[in-house]
Image 1 (tube, rainbow, N blue to C red):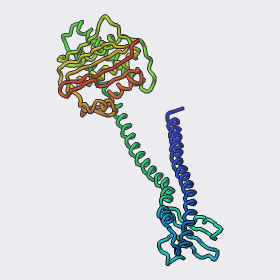
Image 2 (cartoon, rainbow, N blue to C red):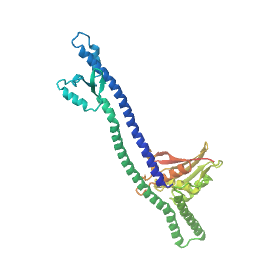
Image 3 (cartoon, helix red, strand yellow):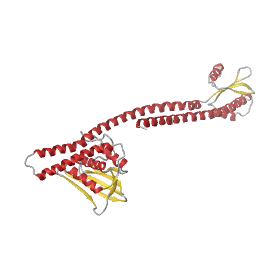
Image 4 (tube, rainbow, N blue to C red):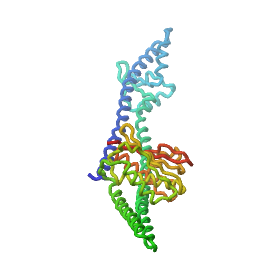
Length: 379
């Protein structure tokens, strides 16, 4: 099943789930409204009996305090009773003069009137709260649809912008990855054209050219592995780190001091893909070099604690603000005017998705330097 089919099905499942969540409030509100309607009919019956009692005893000296309290508590319910002569007998509306208008108003509510041995019909209106409850799910639905529309538009715009950043970043990252060995080969060719080069120097230049050609092959292999599951092998981390340091040192300023520190009496093995792992290390070192003004130090420390290999790459460059510790690993983020903003994002994917490890900014102080930490399980 291709990615577009999976995405289409996922959208369908989410739409069905969303409809389900929208229907639940409608059913629940309808359930509440029905129960309140039943309760309201009971209130109407009590109210009619109370009005009838007050009407029958209005000329007596009986204490009607209790009945008055009932009317006060049920003042949200409005009733009109019709006698056998089709005349209004009782009601609790405040406008007694226009009884025909009251009856017309109650009938417009389309509520089935109650029946009673004493009255031909008992018309009533539901309280406003019951009407609001019945309309609330519709209001909620409209607001939710409005929110979903805005959220989808924002998300779609953000997704397209991120896709554009990824494509641009991938193109620039490819050019950058290819640029380093290509510029190296051109430089070595210029050296070969110079006169007075000894055989030993020529041999050294040829070795460096072979390294750059190998690097071009590695770049091709690296990009071919993106999106697929790479093959992992048990490797010695000091050897892998030393290989990356040698390559980067030959292409960096002579004023940069490179160091690899580890306990030579200890073993540091991990399941890695050598090509992708060296890509991560070179990316981090390259960022460190870009953060320095052609001089300083880059120190890699390797320790193994509790079955975890800890790699710390420290530099004395410009540093990173603490608010950007997580942002630097997002696609498209770069502080450099010519930056591509994809190297560290790919590094994070390689370490965490492919190697079950972790990469993060351990510490950084602006103007003093940065330490990037990588954790890999030992084997």
